[in-house]
Length: 193
Image (tube, rainbow, N blue to C red; front, side):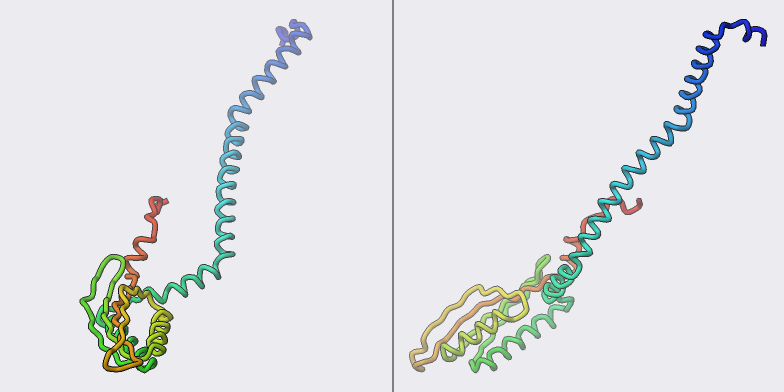
């Protein structure tokens, strides 16, 4: 204590000031700086989560549109086997020809299984009036299925005036639901985190 009393007041003041500065520096480096770093990290995480939440809100706002689009496209995703697929399609073509009052001859071709599509090609020979043929074609294009017209040939029948013969090669396409979903789903690299 005697040594402290021998120090001049100005030097005491400077020593107290230096001791205060060193104390603040130690406190800052030990407690304040780690807390500051933690606050900065939390702010970055908060910003990332806020952006993710905004993206989820945008997606939620589009939910009804997404669901209606899926419902519309789900008609083309048939989880049925090939025999059911071909049989139903041939029955549907026969039904359309009966409704249109046409005579029909079907020549199915082998089923082509491709990824992600299955293709079933049928050659149709139709006979009837021009009006009935156009009705049939209109109904065919309104079928809720993926249909591709490869060839359409119209000819007059010499023996039967007023009637036309149409040769039509069409493909019915079916999206293989399993292959399509595997292709559309992104691989998630951070599943464990």
